[in-house]
Each structure stands twice: as structure tokens, then as C-alpha cells.
Amino acid sequence: MKELSTMEMLTKWEAQRDIKNLMGKLANCILLNREGEIFDLFWSQERADVCLGFNEGWYAGPEAIRGYYQAERARCALVADCLRRAYPKQLGGKSDQEIYGIGVFKARPLYAPVIEAADDGQTAKGLWYCMGTSAPVDAAGPVANWTWGYYCGDFTKEGGQRRIWHLQYINDVQCISGQSWGRPQTPYPELEEFAPLKDFSMPEPTVKTCLREYYTPLRPMTPAPELPVPYATFDETFSYGMEG
Image 1 (cartoon, rainbow, N blue to C red):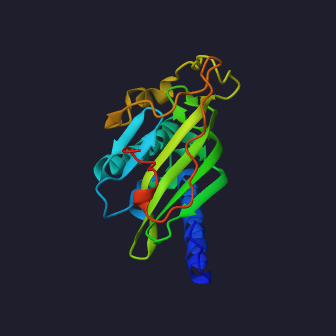
Image 2 (image 1 turned 90 degrees about the horizontal axis):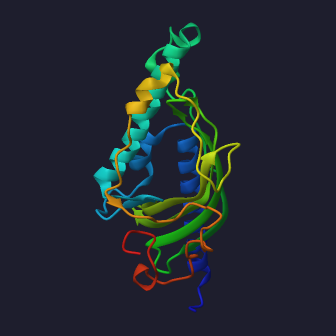
Image 3 (image 1 turned 180 degrees about the horizontal axis):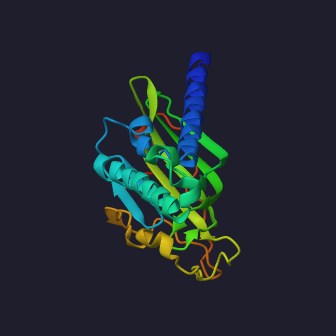
């Protein structure tokens, strides 16, 4: 392993700090239902091979990722409209802007970070565990959920700033709170006030594949995603993107 100078170690420390701050800002944007801003704020604006992965597959390329976040924003606006119809006394006199984000709660706290920056300073890698919770609003109204899994990503440097290049958010647990993590979920009855949400669908991943199997009692032992290790240039390490 290369012995680093004091300046090289400082540069790596700065990169780790920048990645921690970037991911902290991302988590806060999700909490505040600001998905519509995420691509422009945090993702690479220069690379064509950006990709965003979930358990069910990849959103590949800038337009697919931007489309995913814009759909999240549109869904949030539809939720607010449904809640305004359901509670006209409390929300009927408020504008779309005033009630945007109401009813939806998505906490994605990041734990146990493992971050490595390349010796050449151009890229970095990180992995976090996320013990999250959410209260998405669907055709049954607000429903509390557990969401436990991993964030892992590759980061690039553009104009002196760290940007997301590849990112995965893959869950072990995604289930309704109060129900079994490892058995089929029993949905709650649909409510008339939230019927418009039944017809809303998120865009499908551009590449459908199983990135991680959800936990069941019969799931084979499933290791964590590969941990970042020290590396000199990105050519010498693995990728958290589709090619990996």
C-alpha cells in the first residue's frame, strides 16, 4: 500500500468529509420531500453513465434518473391534493405550495459509513447502512413502513465538488409496520378519498433485475454489498454501478 504524504492524507480526509456532507444533504432532501431538486443538486452533470439502483433494477442515464425524481415530486403533489380533499376544513384554503409535502414522511438516517477516496483525488466510494422508516400515502391513506437496507455509491469530482456517479438503495426489509418482515404483507383497505393514488405509477426501471432479494425466513445468507477498500484510481477498484 502506498505511503501517503501529509497533504495526500489531508486531501483524502477532505474527500471523506465532502461525501459525508453530500449524503447527509441527500437524506435531508428526502426527509423534506425535495426529490425534485436532488438530481441537479447532487448528481453528476457530466457523465452519461450515471445510474440509480433499487431492489428491482436500475434507472440508467440522466433522463431516467431525473424522471424518477420528478415522478416522486409529482406523486407528493398528488398526495397533498388528496389530503386537501379529505380534510377540506383544515387544508381547503391553502395553496399547492403551502401543502406540498404534507402527509408524507421518509426518514433515511445513514449509519456505519465506510468511505474511501482514490489516491488520484478524482473519485470516491461509500457504503452506509440505513435503518429507515416511512409513511407513504397510498390508496389506503398514510401507512407506516419499515425500510432497512444499504446505500452504496461511487462519487466523482466536477468543478471542485463531489457528485454522485452511481448510487444504490437496496433494502433487506421493506414492510408495513406491525406486520411480519418475512411474510407477505396484508394491505389496508382502500379509502375513497385517496382513490387517485391507485392509478398513479412510478416509472419502471430502465433495466429490470434483482439487485437484492428482500428478507424472508427462507432467503439464503446474503452478505452486505462489497466494502470500499483503499485504491489509487477507479480502474483499480470495483463499481457500484451497473457494470459492477
